[in-house]
Length: 180
Picture 1 (cartoon, rainbow, N blue to C red):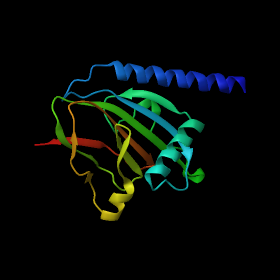
Picture 2: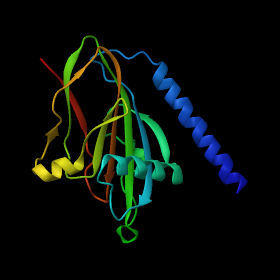
Picture 3: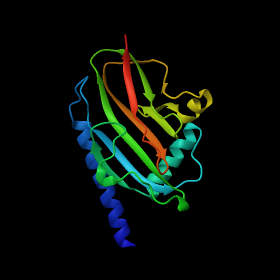
């Protein structure tokens, strides 16, 4: 029990350290920024549908199964050492992924955010606010989805992508673009 508690405290401290490094880093506009990836494996039979359900489910999953945290070069990337396969299909385990990065704008801009795999369960958050989720793309039947343009102020913004994939499914990639 004590060993588990120590491991949990260690994981919390490591997460805090990575967060502080990302928050302190100077974010340069129009340059690829490091992306923080939090990955875990858990048993899921269904995925949350509404924003509140997604938030509760992700909080519960990452609290119960801390998983691993690494820095990668872009959204949709997993280091080879982490592996892609969740586990065997017989036990219904899924790979739960949370990518987080800072984007910087030198001037106010209208931006769109999109994903290339709208058929997988996913959600996009900007500055902690829910932007879009997989349920809206399932309804429209689109292969690639972009959110409506959002007016953003100049400065740093935190962009997050939560995704769940099963065995042999391709990873989603988050895309964003400035309009005008």
